[in-house]
Length: 289
Image 1 (tube, rainbow, N blue to C red):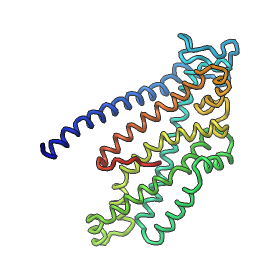
Image 2: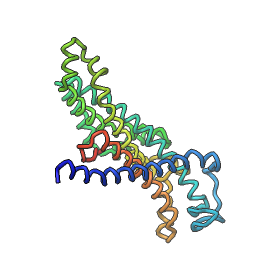
Image 3: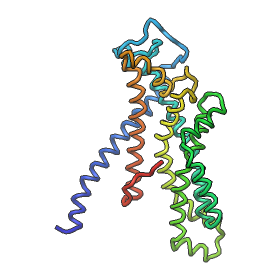
Image 4: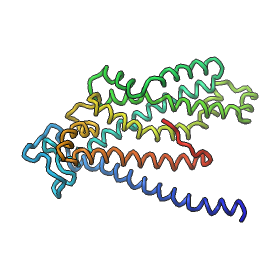
């Protein structure tokens, strides 16, 4: 059997598994987006409302995910909490990607002493744990969505800067860049016209992979009481509030917010993995964000 035949037979099952994973993740993500867009229109949530007569009811036809310790519908609050998490995740990921792309592209294009100085600054910030630095930033503001966005965005651009810089350094050695420099193009023109378009696929992939990370970061801050106000529907707040009920044997106020946190992030990560394999099929390692 020839090598090409062996590779062809091995590649077909792999391609089939990739397509199954792609469609599964896409369907899950589509259902999530439909829920967070349509449910608030059909069922507005009063975040201050409580009903002590209806507290801690197990999942039923009236409340598919049960009710929490003050009688609020867990399913409705999960949807609203996921809506907030997706907003924070997407905006924070875009913010971090823009900052990281700008810093990484500038360092890689400049080279020399500028590159070394910028990367030393990146190393200094990387030495501080993301969560600790995020707590420091968000503690300077009142609890709310936008302080969390700022916190996540300012602590997650470092890996993108490294990825973009490495890609720029690789592109600088290509023949078309040498031709542009030989033709008299300025360093800025080379960076904007030739280097930056070449790093956009990797930067976009980094942004998608950063969304699940940002969602978990927001939930961790809310769980610690430093994210959204405690009365706001947030997955981190819901898990924090449900700790006492879990010890008492009421599992649903903890289980369902946890699933709403895990399943969408796995779907987004799965789509990003398929994208990574398509833009760079030879690289099997994960981008560590």
